[in-house]
Length: 211
Image 1 (cartoon, rainbow, N blue to C red):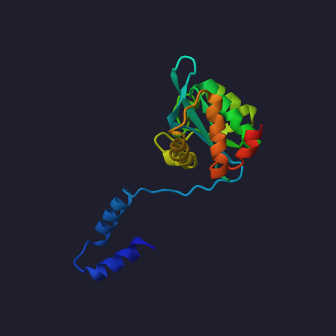
Image 2: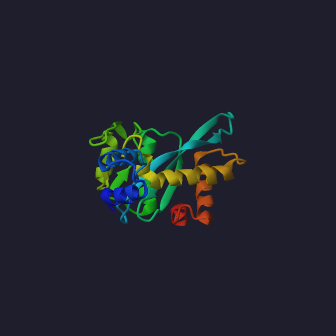
Image 3: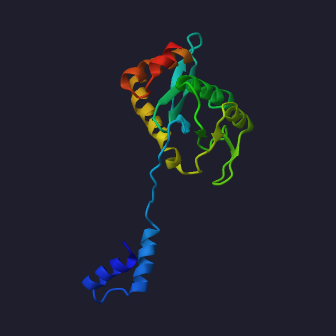
């Protein structure tokens, strides 16, 4: 389809309408406002998308009654949508890297590319073309033979796979846990594994739970 064909059809129906040059200007102005998207294709083992869920789970200290928040790390393989989740006390660098190690153990290997968002724990300076990745995070990726390719700032569709999985975790798992009281991080992770297996959210959770 060309603009000439569209204009020919338009002017045949509206003889007193816009001339061709004005029609093209108006069309391009309209086209520029369209929310363009591109379908992403992911090869097997190519990309691993990682993020933390926005909500947390409360964990109660048996002795003091203090309530701490458990943060939920989520990782999704782009090609197969094979997913992993675990709870950590923080979203700081040590827990961030340990969660990746747990994900690699669960998947039985690493992908070619890691795709995080632009959280400070992963990216020191966000940039569309040349982001500055945290040195320790880069070192971990190199250890596994991976590269880090952060999503562009304010472009959640760049990591739509993990965004969708985070939504499932927050709606499905948190809904089931709303009446439960957890007393340790280990209890939270055991509960996540127990819920994931029958639901099919995280395929292969049985093998992870047995380790």
